[in-house]
Image (cartoon, rainbow, N blue to C red; front, side, top):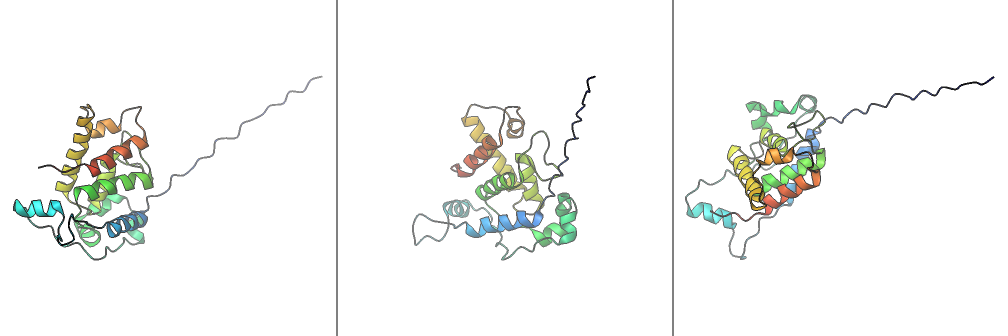
Length: 196
């Protein structure tokens, strides 16, 4: 008499994706901006080269940065991040002028901290593609539409220099793309010399 034993495989464990930590993201952004020192070529020059160029070309002066950004409270952390784009909330928690370089560095920081995704701007856990990370910053009031547009132009210029004609958001979604390649592209664009 032979006995047959059946083994049942337990169902796979479901892992809940973490909730987007807006407080942590804002804390990282604040730390990045606080640590960033604006250097000039000569110790007697108090403005950066882009500031001097903007001044010479008659560009409007950027608004003075806010001293401290108030973090969203518990209720806002529980709501989706699109709530941060509501003007009253954005005014209270954002409206922080940043340079294109700072915007791109922060875009890379968002992808590094919360993860990277393809074929959608953002997942429920906060993983984002390049456009999704830019949108999170914009919704939080970190930079404005002009900053986002100029950052996109820099990303496109880096791809063009590599012989790629795809739009950077399409490049992000290519099947063989990796998170490391995406972060490297964003960081390369951040370091790119600005030419007028």
